[in-house]
Structure formats: C-alpha cells, structure tokens
Length: 428
Image 1 (cartoon, helix red, strand yellow):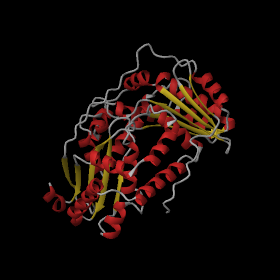
Image 2: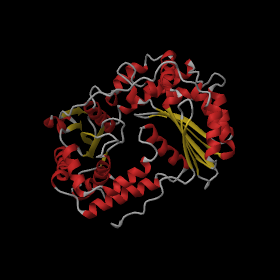
Image 3: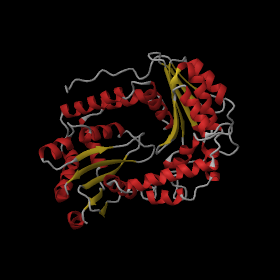
Image 4: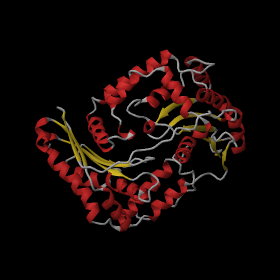
C-alpha cells in the first residue's frame, strides 16, 4: 500500500432529497439508476440502549416478531408477498436503533413498501410467534456461553458499562425474556414506533420525488400518539480499573483489554477510528505484526472501536495458548502504552487513513449500503452530511491528535481474562 492520499468519492449521488413529513417522519430519497434495485431502511430510535434491567432484550424480541403478523396478514401471507417477487425483507435491532430493511426490483418497490408500512404501523404480535422467537433468542443466548471469546468480551462489556443500558447482561436478558408478554411488545411499539421517531431512507432506480410520494401514501396518515416521546437519559459512567477472571478449561485463552471511549459526536471520534485501524485492522496492523507474526503469540488478535450514540468502548484482544497469557497480556499493554508515548510516523498515519477511507468507499457501493449508512447517521442525530464530514475529519487528523487522544482514552484499564485455571489464576 502506498502512502498517497486516496481520492475521496462523492458523499452521495447528486439526485438526493431530504424532507420531513408533517407528522415528523424524516425521509431521505436518493436516485441511483445504476442497477434496477431499490433498497430502503426504516430506522426507529429505540434499541438495546433504550432498555433497562426490567426489560432487557425487549427490542430484540419485538423486532423478531414484528414481521410475523399484522392486523391483516399472518406470517405465511407476509412471506408469500416477499418470496413471490424475490424481494428481501426483515427487521433487526442494534444498540441505538431498531430497523426494518427491504430490497426489491424497482417495479415491485411500491408493493414491498406497502407491506413494510403495514408491518411497522399495524403489527399483531401473535402469541405463537412470540413463543417461537422467545425460544430462539434464549437458545442463542445459551450458545453464546459456549463461545469463549464472547464470554470474555461480555464480562468486559458488563464491567465497563455497569449501571448503563449498554452493559445489560445476558443473564438479565434471559430473565426478562422468559416473562415478556404480548402486552409488553404492544406497549413498547406504541411508545417508540411513531413517525417523529423514525427515519426512512430509499436508494435506487426511483426518483426522489416518487419515493417521497409513495412514503406519503403509506406513512403520511401515520398519526402521532398523544403521549410525548419517552426521553432517553444515559447515566454518567466513571472510569474504574477492573479485572475479571473467568476460569474455563479451554484450549485457547483470551485476554481482552477495554477502555471507555468517546461517543460518535466527539471531536476525538476520527482519531479513535484511526487508532483502532492502526492497531487491529488487517494483516498489516500493529497488533497482528508485533504479536502474531513476530512473537507467535496469537491465534487471533485485533482491536475495535464501535460507533455509539453514548459513551463507546475501545477494545483490544488476543486469543493465545494458555501458557502464553502473561506475555500476551504484557504485549497488548505495551502496544497500547506505546501510542501514549511514541507518535505514529507520517507513513503509519497515512496508511491508516488510506485503509479507513478505502474500506469506507467499498462499504457504500450498493443501494442497501448507502441507505444503511445515511439513515444510520440521521437516526444518530448527525445528519446525512456526516457522510462527507467523517471523511474530511479522517483526512484532517494529525499525528499530534492521535497521541493526545490515546493519552486521554487509555487511562483506566478494564481486563477480562478467560482460560484454564493454571494459566489465569496466578493473574487474578
């Protein structure tokens, strides 16, 4: 990879329209006629971060059942509509939002959009579908307990976010999941699935004006509830170094380091993305080269910094042979500490920027990817213009900013160790 600066791609195709309907629904419509495909995303500002200890997992169950019945159609009839035209249609949940996604050929867009409107506005939440999805979710939570890295990481996450919705435990979710009722799903839907709390993005071979016209047709009469939108108030988190040791007789041990890190609206966001890319993105990353290639310590090694509406996390981890846990832990710590004391070279910084901007451009090639990216920024409160602002911010980050951000972020360390007792008990 060369150190030359990548040519920045246009943020969005030129035929873009953003509007807000009278009922408060935000619409972003983009014409992209390259392929005869239309993709749409319906974002709702309600995700795992909006849950509490009393309803942990609620939006996971709600989105799982959302597409399984309406006041006019059952699950089979919904599936028939989608499969008969070869479309894709589904719902999911993330930390900061819930989402309904669709993709179809342009001739069938109106049909699938009408179905999506019916699902979003008039779900029936059938009891039999609730029971089925409840069992599937509980099975999924059980399977996570058999995945050593997931166990180690979840313990770290729960420690970092103690008392915060991002830190709700799988055990809390299991307890709540077992007692959720149809009434709980209806109440949450009425509270959060409302036009002034939603963003719809449409990208494809359809004019922006036609997209808005269709959305007005199917969503324009979506009325606001009389109650105000529930306010989201995240608790303040305090840094407090902690160590969690989990004894599990595995062939591979895991060392996971974590730090509280800034939210997406922080001036440090771009620098933190560069740091995570430099440390843990790909075979040329610092952690991979130093700990795996040079020292032979790692089966798997990386770092990540997820985008979050509230306080995020910076995580570096390594999977290693149990006997190597002490030196692997020391190696991770050394690489983190190095960022605080030793500046990146100009070439290291530029390579990291190139990697981020290149992967970012590749991540916006399809209509679905564009709809996802711009809607995500809008629902986070950043606006679709953040697409351009993010790329400019990455290009503008300096060596000094990277070091200052590392010094500010890598303070109180959270450590999660998992492996055989003989390997990790001495490190307790």
